[in-house]
Length: 332
Image (cartoon, rainbow, N blue to C red; front, side):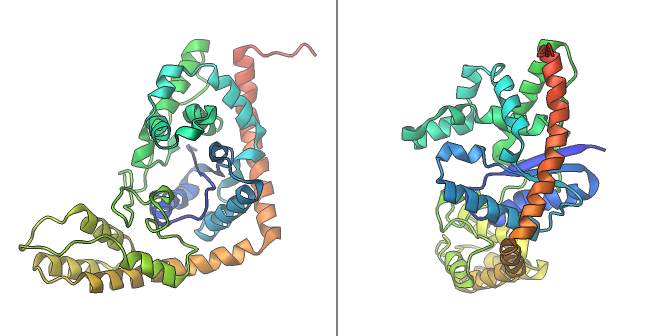
């Protein structure tokens, strides 16, 4: 059976972009693949969270994953720091990652530009840790967003480099996977690109937000003065809202507002009210389930413990092979 690996940083609540960009793929994959899904709490240390925030965010994301349908009986769901083999392999793989290629990483260049007071070594070697997350379970596929394609290519580079350096076939070369065959990119509400926490509080639709907050965000979304001629191309901000509507609304609803737009008769207030109603209809049952699971500490502990044991078993098998290939052989 083919293997897939993916994770998400515990930097707060999950949003609509996370769901359609990754979780839907997770749900399909757990049915058809040997699946490893993890909460990347080691990755989050690059932003120096407080211990309280780190633990609280891990708990939040774990509850959200479960509420959205991940089944611990069908996949391996675990917390990254519960698997120490990841950190050990990270050390080994860093020896084969070179400064120039790390500095050329798009994400690193972006961090250098936008957070000059916190350009730490973890940011520089971030792609190596991402590669290790994938390679330690010998993944065949990784569900990634468009913005992470470079990191996946770097993972393939490190796998090939290790295999060539030691004349082995230890690591397979993972491919990108998406549910539709295309890498999904869900737009944000502020017209800054994909839906993201970094876009500001008003950019993302979080599953754990109250109804009134979600409604306000959508009603404040960027629009324009309306189309000036029939069937004109939608500007990016308007197309973004239509793209979100396509994810949560009936086809007939999307067609209704698309027809109004093409006829220069659309009223953005009505359009956004409908979008808000459909978003809330979609997120409310999941939000209620999140809160139910989050209050059950015994269940969360059981899930985390089981996931850690399964992930450590897989990781130790790979690490044992890697140690032998490198030449780490004990005298006792």
